[in-house]
Image (cartoon, rainbow over all chains, first blue to last red; front, side, top):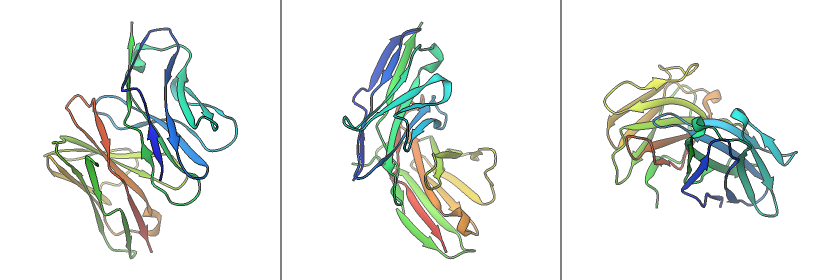
Length: 114
Length: 116
């Protein structure tokens, strides 16, 4: 069975500083990994995904994520945080092969302080 | 355990028929629920925002008459795929906000729809 862990409920970072939102996963076989962002009372917005290829994936709004197979991690990063990045971030995983459901982490709230 | 329950998990229906998927918030009232679909190997796409007691807000490109959303109570939203066709086969997932500020979001387990 697949699972996703986002170990931090809350991440606080000063504007202009780099940010990292952590995600580790468990899946049999090759993973298919996603990051989504949700602003209050809005639907999820897709940020980026990893299927195969380069371990560093670049996505929307300047975000990137690094796939690390040995550590089964897919941490979300941004070199310089903006106040407008403050939101709820979800990591999700499914198996690459076959019809398996998307499993979400519980989310991490990012607060960027001016 | 699950705080948002979706039913059914798997459904196969014949082309031309309608199928209903339920999304229930357990132990909390959800004024807002979201419906998503995911095609194989693609990311999740928001279909609509379901607000209790009012009409759903659909995303651009989503057919309102085909994907009927009803949010009749604070714990239940339903998605009905009307006159289903094979291209509607997809993974449908809902989410519910625990509080009005949207600070806590829970996801259902998802529903696989196969139209034959």
